[in-house]
Length: 355
Image (cartoon, rainbow, N blue to C red; front, side):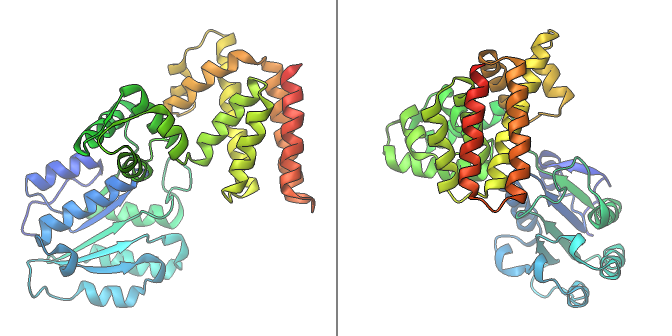
């Protein structure tokens, strides 16, 4: 391209912005990660730098779910008419859903991408790594190719301090105020999900109208993610607060969460408690757990587990985990009401926690 080619390696969002500021552009970008707002922001920044203020109208947009590789290759060959570059944006392309031949055709096309063509693939609708640390299968083959030709950018979750500052700055711009403690609680409720935090702040600021956002506002208005509500449910069990525990379970089910997903989230919360309680018996600290079990970005889950696990013995946590394991089998094999199965499991856990 007319600008200096970028380093062929995996980068983060800050690296991309620095390169754009230095007028360093690549032929191809692959932008993904848990921070969807940043994925969208980096995509927009690249397109604005490439096409100018009319980027939204001048780029060709393709949905990855409906992609036709032959048509895409034809579009790649088009010479730009009203700008310097022929920019193509593909959203949510999952190479695993393509045949091996189609993936190879795409890779061949990327390797021979014309200088005047820029291809951007961004992932906003699914976890391209499928919960793992590294790419696998066809997506790995595709990203390996892109790293040789351009840039693969991962937009990870912001750390708690960065997110808290962002929340406080956003609230201030909206004419409201929020304490650091309440900003942390909001970030925790939303599991550092920047998209949900943005939506919740719009709601909270509109509700408070230039006043302070209080904890009671967050508790009553913010829709916690399934994992957050599961943390609360686990805490209710360890505190032997049966009323709160059943309220939270019913709330999770009323939100139309799949029962298996609800059980999985509750199981993860108890696994956090088990790891914390076990670590305490051998004098390990929170940072040890965060590093050993890859909790980076979810440090608050470990801190909460250390706080709550003191209320329940290690043996009783094991009993609860066994109950959850048996319940998982029942949910998958039994024709009985899933709600009744989960309520029975919760009753058994509350009894186990009292032993």
